[in-house]
Image 1: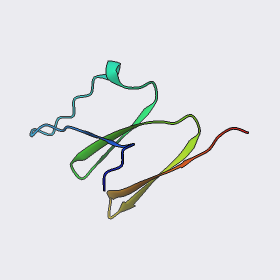
Image 2: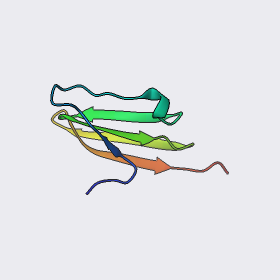
Image 3: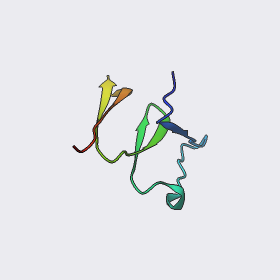
Amino acid sequence: MTSPRMKELQISSQGILNIDTMELSESCVIVISDGKAKMAELPLHADMTIKTYKGIVTRVNWDEGEEF
């Protein structure tokens, strides 16, 4: 299942990841693992946990909050 939050980034057949920083949001995170790259915008208030198994990212969890 693909998360709508994490957007797939293309890696060339030579293993090159081209990113135009002018097109990125002001705050974002890029996760690279096992030949794949994904990007997500960062919310205003959240904890992000990256889970791995044998050095490969298996899950990205988001716990968002709101100031009271």
